[in-house]
Image 1 (cartoon, rainbow, N blue to C red):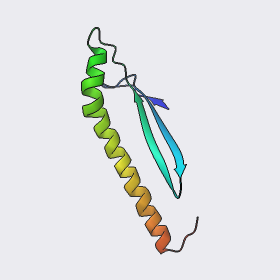
Image 2 (tube, rainbow, N blue to C red; image 1 turned 180 degrees about the vertical axis):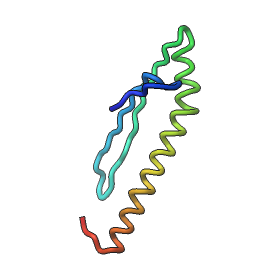
Image 3 (cartoon, one colour; image 1 turned 90 degrees about the vertical axis):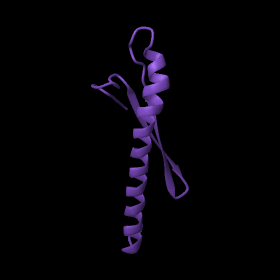
Image 4 (cartoon, rainbow, N blue to C red; image 1 turned 45 degrees about the horizontal axis):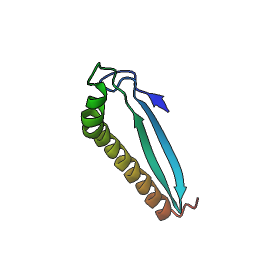
Length: 83
């Protein structure tokens, strides 16, 4: 787990979870953001920052991690590396 220390997501707690699944791994990123803005903080975090900013970045991060892991697996397979 880590906590964002700057920017619009300052204070957001992020947890990465990994679970074995067959020959692969499921990866999940969990975000907990409560914006401390009077009256509108929760609304802004739930309707704007979360779906527009955080989900977009998290999706791109997971896609890049998946592509990297799968490319590494293909290279190892082509080299005859067994894990």
